[in-house]
Length: 202
Image (tube, rainbow, N blue to C red; front, top):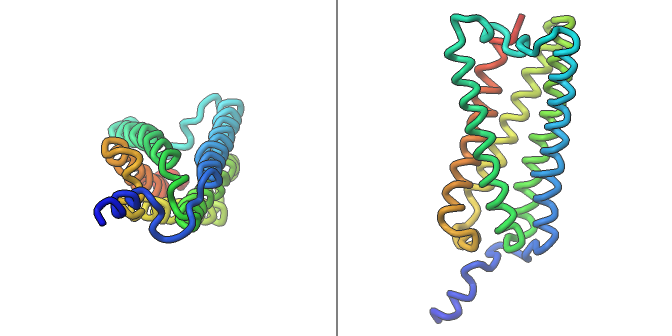
């Protein structure tokens, strides 16, 4: 009995294993869409520097000397979220193949929505800095809300994977991944989605 239970420790509990397909899907979403978003950021910052010789306009009122502390706190939070992304990726690459297909699909689906909606943020900000208007700012807020909610849904999907299904990654990587996933979602939902918009609004 104990031997049978042991054999099932890392077996998918809720359906057919995703196998190699799951690992490939994680790579496509986490790395492929992630790289596309980074390219979008590079374009946006390069465009702002070309037009205004600086990208500080993105910080709005946070660029004021009196709010340097807040901007530096934001920098630190961005750094933590970026660092946390890597153990989250490593953990999913290790466990994806052992998870049920629908679990991997849900995790990658929510994260794909996050990346897709984020692709519109910087282009809209560039347009807004060129010609501020209430309608465009509303779309920026809606985009950030969608990105924040999808990040929360992604994190929830990762954190609620049955513990027996992720033991293959090892406890240290699990803890680092869960911490990184949680903080990434927190930064996107709270700092990007709630704190930043009123500071950016002209």
